Length: 204
Image (tube, rainbow, N blue to C red; front, side, top):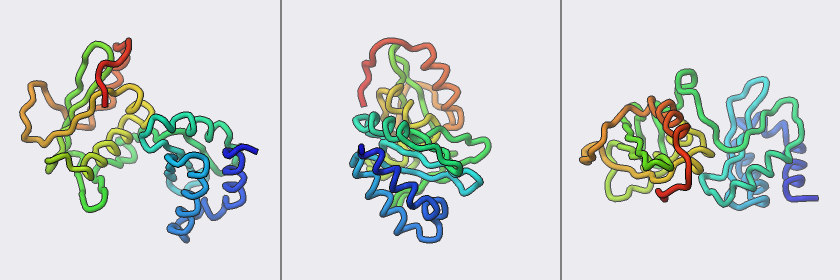
């Protein structure tokens, strides 16, 4: 039996607890994280809202090395009536769910409506500048928020495979290209990446 099969056997055995995790969130999340990391130490997870069918997302946490484990894990999932199993953090429709108004990580909070971006085009792969209020001195918490924003708007897979350079600045930084509100990013990104071909020159 593979590690993937062992994980899903455990998931099925604890399906009701997982579906209703709000009743004992800390314990259930700790147990789930332990089981998932037996498959790969970099795998993480997310749950969708509690509805007739609940989404369970397996993520690589933005670590490209773990992408094959995400793909293999979701491919090994059994058919479960009450679950939608998703590989990688998906894009979120901000027009409907609006998950981006406020994003918090540790003690930092960012109102995404105040974040701007500039897309970069080197002819081969897209790059991006993000302008986040309060950012300075390589702030690790605001950097994490930046990646959470990108994953929500573009999806984890596209962020890791279709974006090269990702740089974060304060809004006061002087750059030569025009800036746009973050809500315009998905459309602009899709239009740019549809035109780009070749190997990347930008590196994260």
